Image 1 (cartoon, rainbow, N blue to C red):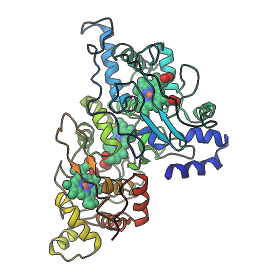
Image 2: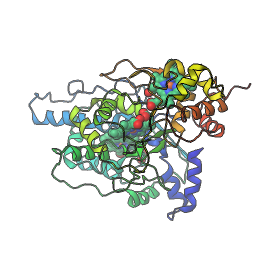
Image 3: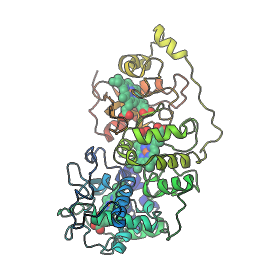
Image 4: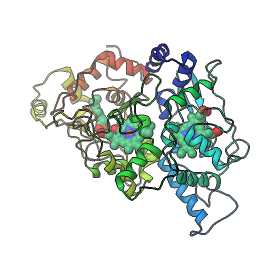
Length: 468
Ligand code: HEC
Ligand code: HEC
Ligand code: HEC
């Protein structure tokens, strides 16, 4: 397994020793994406409709009451930060915690962040809350596992932390539900190494600076680096599983990372595998509706759209899009791909008898068509797709084996699904069909091998390949 290997490899390299490493590795990559092989799928479609009125608390303030406004602002920010994704267990009460997050050395559980005094954060002062959310330090002084993305939230301005606090204290229903201890065995369960990790890798927490939100690009940067914690999934990780960059100072930032056996792909300006060919409008449509003319959300991103970005204002989505469009390509010399109809003609003429072409015709062409162009907004195009042309084929293998479902969104309520082929196609068939897809219609990406497929099949818990 990827995560075990990473842990062993890193253990030799980290000066702070094996303990520190093990502990640091704990949150593993999939810690940030609470859906996956060993982790139960994320919450329910309807992210907690926790509102002022539903929320019980004493005062029922009028709409123009500043405190009520602060609570509403906090609710919006909690959505943008997707706190519910991790702090709400499947079928669990909103924000009551208990979502299992797998790691190589055991399972950790998210905590109860409802304002219940005994089991939640009801006794937290604003300072305690801030220390947990932005500094990664619990009320009892111990360091949190970085599964809680405090390295991103460190960028959140104090004024916004205050609004979040107001919402969690006054807008969320208290739930009495005790936290579950991790099942990580001693000595790995000791938390002190996490504080070493924190000192090495957590950025400075931002001071109370004036907001620069009236400039859309600054607003976009603020949302992406901070509340949106986009880099928790989209930035590659170093030896201690720290994000290789937390800002655009390095082209590693948002250049793609593997999370939960999906590639959270390159969001930089690259024309082949990044967002170089996406317009601002394409990006906002994707974040709002989960699909556009280039692609449709799947894997961890489907959850992000469903629970978080679809609720963001058009201004904020535009700000994110404008900011993402400022990110320079990792490879500025790469040539844009151009559509080529040779393969479409060969498929129609029946002249390509390769296993890849035949597997495609039998299993994929009904939806994605022999032109590879699919049906707009329904079955995404495979031709010239940045997802298909990513060097790392993990997402493609995963989606072919297990299928995928688009997110449910207000603006695009019909969500289409793709079936999984794990029980129908062998590792070699999957490798052949993906190699075919990655070299047809103008696509230019490396071949996929049967051993790559075998590995993903095992990691994602897909059905064993059928024996012929
Ligand atoms: C990617 C998953 C994830 C997201 C998103 C997330 N958290 Fe957490 N959070 C966790 C986990 C896991 C823990 C427990 C860590 C531990 O036990 O060391 C935690 C711990 C906390 C704690 C400490 C609670 C305690 O019992 O001391 C607070 C407070 C908290 N989170 C608030 C938030 C808020 C507010 C948001 C949104 C702004 C948020 N979290 C978003 C995963 C997440
Ligand atoms: C929980 C992990 C996770 C987080 C957090 C996350 N993403 Fe993603 N994202 C993914 C994965 C996995 C994919 C690949 C699947 C897909 O294309 O839908 C993806 C794909 C995308 C795509 C589609 C790119 C393409 O070329 O198809 C965009 C745009 C995107 N993410 C933007 C964002 C932004 C902006 C944020 C922060 C607000 C964010 N993501 C946060 C996991 C994540
Ligand atoms: C029943 C229709 C259907 C069939 C058959 C089908 N797909 Fe899909 N495919 C979809 C849908 C719908 C999506 C979008 C899923 C999502 O976003 O969650 C998709 C997404 C994809 C993607 C990701 C594209 C992107 O940018 O989001 C790839 C790659 C893909 N399919 C390849 C294949 C291959 C290869 C086959 C044959 C082995 C196949 N599909 C068979 C409907 C289908």
